[in-house]
Length: 568
Image (cartoon, rainbow, N blue to C red; front, top):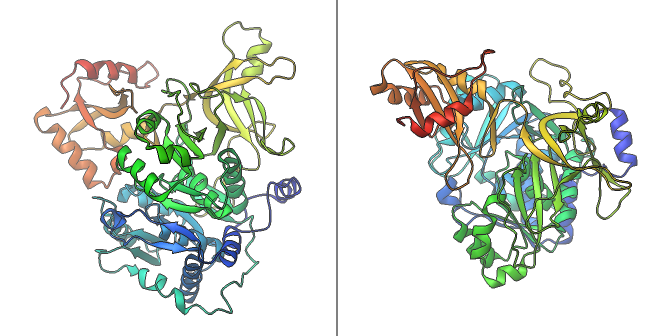
């Protein structure tokens, strides 16, 4: 499926941002030239995490599995442009299936592993998925059981595949297919079909919620490769390196800056299921990683635990931030050989990456063109602050700012077509083609001569609650909680964490009976199949939900109430 216009393809192909090679073709070249080099290494605790025996695959073994699985799926009737939902932890299986999707022209839709049945079904119905591949479980989350239940309710699902011990009956086990790698014909091993274009959609990720609900965004091979190469030139990732992939593939950080970047350059991938800072440092020492991505707030704790060999081997440490640089703890020390790269996720629309200049500060972002650090003529992205010029024209003395808007070869300009639609809905944009993000920014340095204006992203302009890596509209959570038994009114809010970490999701409830209100509330969430990330950490009981005259919930008042209220 093509979502890019002929004009966009011509523009970005002639500029050198986009090419003709799909992701699988790029990886196959590495497999042909470096057959016995290690390509993919699973977390050694993978079996306990998902029921799947950890794999350690060379480039040629990985490619043989890609070809074997491609032949199997073609044999059972899987067609190009089929949307395949993927609920797998970061690992070799997910990498192989990504390459298979690239080879066959499938459209991969990675979903969060902790998604409840209601959210899985909603997303599959939106994009018309015809197949699902999942793990048997993820820690204590019964992933395969949920997928089976959803598939039983959806006549459109034709195939449900599973990887891992202990899967429920009725799912197709893909492990035997992958293990038949040696049966692949040598003659057909490196034959490629070029009917599938690098401009066709390879993956779907959902944008973060804003004034509208998150929507599926389809990205082509070229979108994904441009984004990956933009990040890789900051980290200096090359084929001889080992990159640790710690983030899940349902987000751009794990899928693009982790997996696609590695597959593109042929770097060795060490998949890691994060459990503790100490375990991460131990694994870095054991497997010799040069590149690692971390939540920005974890850097100080991990830095202090790094053994000397790891400090000397690291080339880049990427610190991940979620759409805002305000109020973030930025640890200024770096006693390693690594460069620090700040990676900001702008609403799952695009990743912004830059090498840190000031050790103790997340650097501001330039207004205008974001050029390659290797080729100033190559422009990866353009930024624009919507509303800033109007404020400047009015001569206002207050701090200038505006809404962040973006365009460039890394960004699609329309959503993936929902079921029943021929074309995807255009993303909201300015007259000049800049896509609105609903992220507020303030100018921290005005334009002077040739020096560009610089801004700092502040966070959401809309009523959005960010829970870890997920974002939900406040009113959607309010409506969800009001559907629960015994609840007459409800509102969600984030309570600040005492240790400065991410805010905790809480709910204020007006209930008929406080003695059983909590039990009924959580029981209803479970019965409705609500994803765990939408379950509040705690609930408080209130007499009424405070609202403005326009009906909007006064969430700040609920934060204050939670300090003095009796938490259920």
